[in-house]
Length: 444
Ligand SMILES: [Zn+2]
Image 1 (cartoon, rainbow, N blue to C red):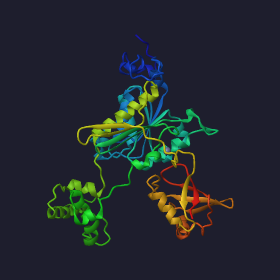
Image 2: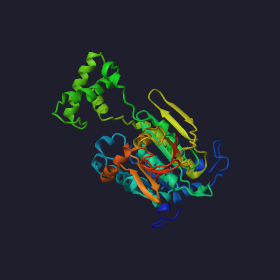
Image 3: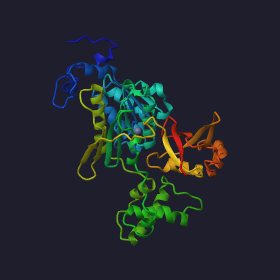
Image 4: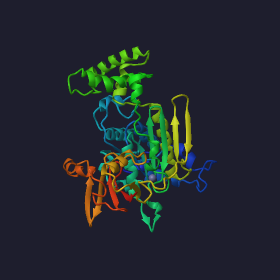
């Protein structure tokens, strides 16, 4: 029998055979093992004692990830989440109970794991990812994301790219923090492994995230086929025309009377076209743009992500290469492919992208390009440049006074603004913690 020592959390909480399930993967060889891996007890020791994991998000994927990682032997886990628990989370975010509604997800999730899994230490941060800095992110061996926002994902991707160290143009591999990214939407999901600076980053594959799909107006207005088309008709056309709750009263997806009105009118519209399937719930879903969260999809994607963390932390197995898609709408389908780096990726390529515009183009056109281009998809870009050795803000949206002062620039041409061919434009946006450099290339 082993002596138990006070304060030695690592050993007091381990009982005989506790990690047998993990040891089977790490302490004997097998056909799927990494070709360079030597089975030993070291990997498990590293996972238990040293390896520091950051989980971003403590929601549907986050709860699954924390549970999977804690039960796989990771004990040094930090979790960041900015949300409070809502009653509608309880069906799948299983670390939360009814009594926890209103409390921060990160705090409750950490408490739950810490009290349930002996020896595991989860440290919570009830914060936005943007409120933590480079020094914070640099301390982790692996970061795993269970986010529902593309902007947050891109920001995290940008943060890890900003931590990379290049010496004479050569990437220092010790500066790479692997990013495991999971995402789900209804019955669809994906899991991917990103080695920042080495493999395709989030922005390299931005075209895979199409902008929000809306139904074409002609379908909504004249040839509806789906119950959703009928609800959209009422939301977009009938509400503003009839103003059922008085002038200027905008449709509020959280007001049951509003939803009830849209629901009744949508039923009438559906009856006209012999369309079935309009329900109160669907009405609310369409009005609030809700895609239902599916617990089983979250479980499958989080399991894939936790497996990748395990493979990379132990280096016992080759990681996923590098993008797995998953779909359980009808039966089950998965497919893995190698997403490729984009040579001129604005986030990870280290070269300023070219912006091709004529000197007579207006600044507004540049702004539109930054937000509408499928490879950039910026949200509220702020454009600055250097002129005569001074920084000059050409346009900035997020501060009202500066917006007002720089708005007239939007209707000026690039030539009128004094911009030259080859001029560098620095663009800041919520999608990245760093400014993105562009080079202006005049077309004639
Ligand atoms: Zn990239």
